[in-house]
Length: 544
Image 1 (cartoon, rainbow, N blue to C red):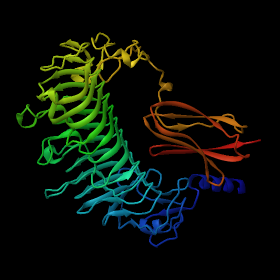
Image 2: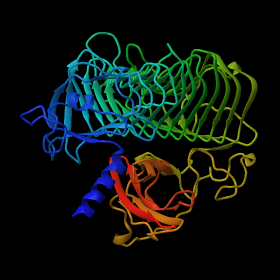
Image 3: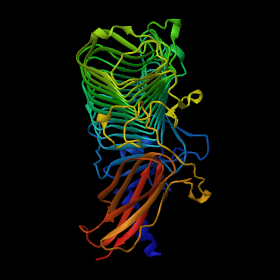
Image 4: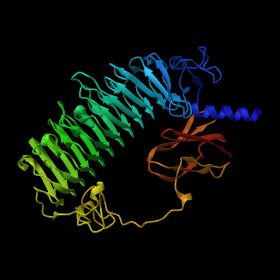
C-alpha cells in the first residue's frame, strides 16, 4: 500500500510539478481545494496557485455544462509560472465547464495556461479575454457571445491560442467586434482554431503597436452573418508574419469592408502566405496601402469566389496589388474567379516574380500591368479558359487543366493534366516527375490499398517504452488519429522537465522516438504525450 501511495505521489508530482487543487461550485462550503473539499469558486482556486500548480475545475459529464458565474483577473502582482512549471487551470477529465464572465478576464501575470474551459460573455459590452502578460496559453477553450472582442491583447509576447472555438461577437453600433485582435507583441501563435460569426475580423493584427513574428496557421475562419462581418484575417503594421494552412470562406461586401478573405495592409513586411484555402468570398487576397516589402504568396488555392451586388468589374477578384515591393507569387491555383483575376491599383507592385501558377476560368484584369515596375518576371504559368492573360515565353495554355473533381472543389491534378511537369525547371528535380507542376498541388501517382481494420488509427495512444528498464536509450512509440500539435516531454521524479523530444505539429500516423538518457542519473522518469486535449503519461526506469 505504501508503494502504491508513493507511485501516486510521483505521478502527480511529475505531471503538475506543484500542488493540485480542485474547484466545485456544488460544494456547500468554501473548501480547502482538496478533492474531497474543493474550493467553491474558480477565483478562490486561482488565488491559491503558484508556479507548477494545477487547478481542476469540476463540471458535468455529457452535453450540459456546469455553469460558474465568476469575475476573474490576474494582476501583475499575482504569481507567475515558469517555462518548466506553468500554472494551469483546466477542466476535470472530460467534464464540461462554462464560465459566465462578469467582465473582462484581464491577465497581467506570466506563464499561465487555460485548458478545456468555456468562457461566455453572455452578451456583455466588454472584451472577453485581455492578455497583457507573456507566455500565456489558451488551449481547447471556447470563447463566445460578447459585444466586443473575444481576445484583445496589448504588447503580449509568446501568446498561444490553440484548438479553441471563438464565435458570436457582435455589437449593435457601427464599430467592430473581432474574434482575436493582437495589438503589438512578439512571437504570438494562433493555431488550429475555429473562429466564426464576428462582426469585425476573425483575426486582426492591429497597427497601433507593431506585431513581430506572428504565426497564424491551421485555422478555420468563416462567417454565416452575410455582410455582417469583415475579413477572415486583416494584418496591419506587421513585421514577419506567417499565414499558413488556413481555411477562409463566406465573406461578403460590408459597410467597412469589401469582403476579401485576407487583407494585408500598409507597413507590413516579410509576410509569408502559403497553403491556404480561400473560397466563397467577395475577394481572395488584398495587398493595399503602400510601404509593404517582401511578400511571398505560394501554394494557395483561391477558388469559387462570388460577386456581391452583381459588379464583377471590382468584386469577386483574385488578388489586388497596391503599393507592394519584392513579391514572390508562385505555385498558386486560382479557379472560378468571377471578378478581376488581378486588381492592379495605382500603387501597383515593384520587383515581382509570378511563376508556376495555374489560372483557370478567370475574368479580365482591373487596372494595368504597366503598374508592375522594377524587375518583373512573369513566366511558366498555366492559363486555362482565362479572359485575360499575361504572356510568358514558357506558358501553358488551354481550356481544361483537368482537375481531379472540380464539382467537389478538389483542385488536385489528375493524371492527364497538361499542368503536370510544366513549371520552371530552375525549381530543381526533387519532384515526382523530375520537374515542378503548375499550381498549388504536385501530382503524385497513387495506388489504392485496402488497409485491414486493425491498422486504422482510431484513437490517441502512448505505448510503453522498450526496453524498460534501459541504459542509456529507449524507444517511445505513439499514435495520432488526427493531425495535431504534439508535445512529448521527459520529467524526473521531482516533476522537473529534463528533455523535450517533440514540440511540433504532426499528421495522422504512428511515430517512433528515441530517448537518450546518457546525461542523466539513474532513477525513475516519466514521459508525457500531449496532443490537443489528450494527455497520457507513462513511467520508465533508467538503470546505470
